[in-house]
Image 1: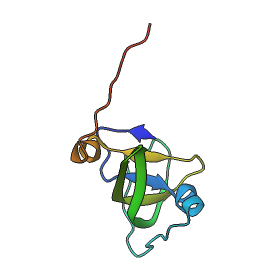
Image 2: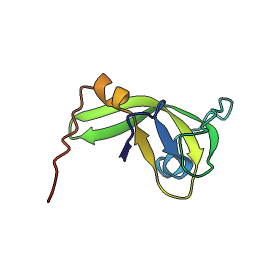
Image 3: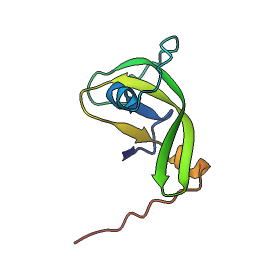
Image 4: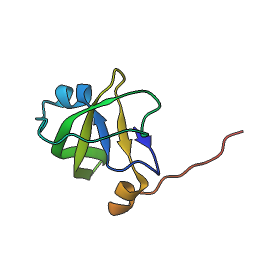
Length: 93
């Protein structure tokens, strides 16, 4: 999972959606120019996808689905704030 303070909306790759067996709504395509450093294609949206962040904490959100070779799940800070999640960015020497 990637946290991207500038990413909006949440993004997931098509290969993850296929693994969990959810359905992609291909009628809604998004322009993702400037989000990735390599060209990616929006293939649709997955609605109300359950994502378990921790035991007892499962969220249900819509994600823009992209075609990309690596398994990728991108959360924005706004999404994490919505569910009152905190990120602890400890520095390591």
